[in-house]
Image 1 (cartoon, protein in one colour):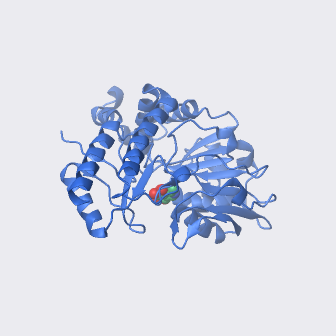
Image 2: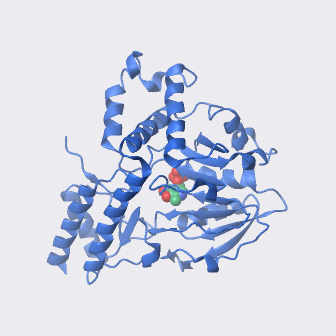
Image 3: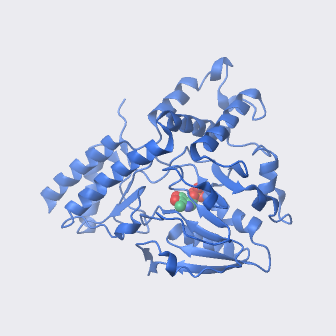
Length: 362
Ligand code: PLP
């Protein structure tokens, strides 16, 4: 079996052991004579998977009891609307920190629902190359919440320190850096993440939300959009994406077996360290536009001297089994996504290729 080095930004690489388990179990789940995707979402077999996924999340992230863990649908984009629908009542305003394309989208969507304010932006034209410092944030102490995007998938920047928001609830889109390292969940009021980068296939969105926030959220919106509905029904209000949740369970089980988030962080830092080190070493050829303190451990972006060379870089890397390296259509350049399931060996292969390519073309 020839597996490629997969550097896609999402959907992205998943741990081989999680996929192999799915392959083994696909036709006959635990001796039931049918696949997990053929089971009722209200039956015992799926209930076991669902509960295990929930408890693995709680264990891996040390999620306190006064937080809900919800499995929802509609992707992170759905949360762009669901957050303000639930948490932004008339007469209040919400603060958004703009650090990339996804936070712009979250801000625009919330603006369709209620009053929003930009608490800080690091936009330079259409580009973003850094995360704002705490003293650049102009926070409204009476805001309903402050929204940040912890990792900016397009521009390769990442918050390394959680901003201090005082008593204002902090809401974070962690789609592209959820579960890359241990975090203090208590610093956040609500976290959401589409699964398709670090934690599973697309189709399921994880929300971790403080129970009191959910309790006090709006009741005058459709039931299906209320966090309360999903919390009261253990995320089984309607049919959940059972296969996506099953696969996510497999990924979380692998994460635990590997030693949990401290070990995952160590691996991730080694991968990013190697790649950024190479970029710095070969800075006469490769150019990393992101400010050093804002560099993302998950998505590494860089440029080559010309777009022509970038195209050749992507094509030649693909010939050597390295895929998913073209930058986002908005930004161009090269983007290397180093999510949890990307092995150090893949980054080592890439770095060897980068050195050869620079030598031949520089
Ligand atoms: N937020 C971030 C940080 C993302 O990287 C993405 C997708 O790449 C999204 C939101 C949108 O996610 P979805 O496609 O699940 O709606």
